[in-house]
Length: 302
Image (cartoon, rainbow, N blue to C red; front, side, top):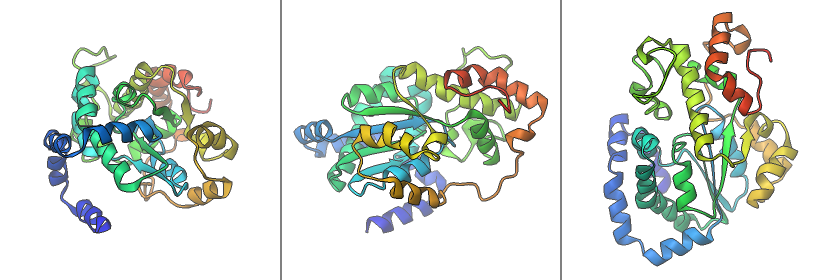
């Protein structure tokens, strides 16, 4: 039955899914009326929990699949996405709103997932709630948080390949991970947003994602996508053991062998090695400092 409901939801017109996401205040109110308060508190307190937060196109799907290799864990990829995205612009600017959203809605959705699946560990790997890091810390003090990062050059190329950031800016795209991704009115920019090229906007989008995460979660461990997909020892040391997950190297290899559901069918943009000099300089100007903070080089080829 649940599989049928998920299939039906996936076929639902995008506008209806967005409308459903906008109903989060009503759904939260319903949950607060029907979920036993004491059981909510105890369940959320006693269940090991983690969140890996990053930008879009940073490998969340494949990492979710790796961590779900533990049959007793319940790890979700981009859950509750439309509600997270629709609240992002306001939550990004107003921490009290982010806390309200998490306390009055998100924690109840997580509780319901835990009660339904009874996992040994609950986790989320997602880009959509990247402005909610501090609110997650406040609501789930026992949870482990991580910042998931992929080389900005590869992320920018992947985002460009998706054809999702064109036609008037991120806020109008049909891909939810980019909604709400636009500079605040008082944010200093090298040039006005409406004068920035498509490439410049994508670079800004990547830099903004990690600026937000590092500002909110300055002491949080950073997990590098490139290491996760190439080094089992790294995965074991930085994720499997800290999270107490029951998976081995064979599980990891099997997960890597499966193509991600949201991988691009074909690439229509040039790889980073073929960026023009102007594009490389633009990337360094907008993302170079953040690349250094995250332990990557700046210019193409570094």
